[in-house]
Amino acid sequence: MRFNEYVGFKSNAGVRVSLDNIKTYPFHLHNDVLELVGLLYGRATISDCATDHVLAPGDVYIFNPNDPHRIVTQEDSGFLTIQIHRETYADLFPSLREMYYVCQPYNPGREGADPELRGLRFLMAKLWQAYGNPEEGGHGLGRLTEQLLQMLLEEFTFYTYRRTPGGQLEIVRQPVSARNLSAMKRYYHVADEIY
Image (cartoon, rainbow, N blue to C red; front, side, top):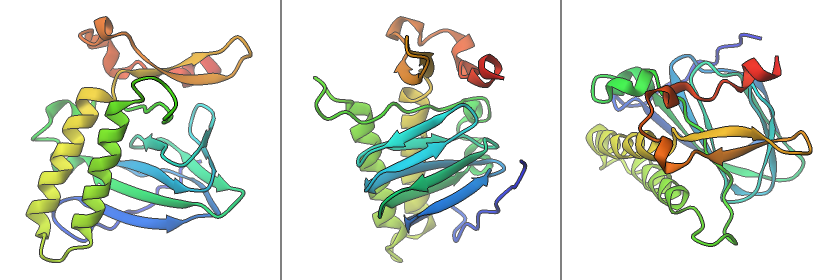
């Protein structure tokens, strides 16, 4: 499967933001585009190159460039989708081409519930607001996209998958002490374990 879906960017900011109501979106990938999908309401199953993930409202999923993925819902579900052209920001963030992002599910009941994820959702909402405002222009969108990418680089490159005793894969955050290891840049090689 190598269906590369073209993403049209309306501004030179290299970002596209949309609200979508999706029932089924077949397997596809985006060449050189980082895609963030936030579930606003409903339930959805996201499939990536490793496994299936069930999303609940508040969850954000990050699709990395060139990773096949699909979305399937069993009920009315709304998504906030942000697509970022990686090459537009590669000079500003030199490690952007090498990083791989993973995001754990939102869990509001957990103590200290995911401040990084709450911050990510806030920046995604600000991007949506700016994207719909013609007075904002490409410069404002670019500035917000830079803030979002900075947060991704600082907070969302230190996650990986772990196999549970029941054989399922779950997303877990790496210990803070492991953050400085250069090997963490592409720690997400789950496909090698599965295939």
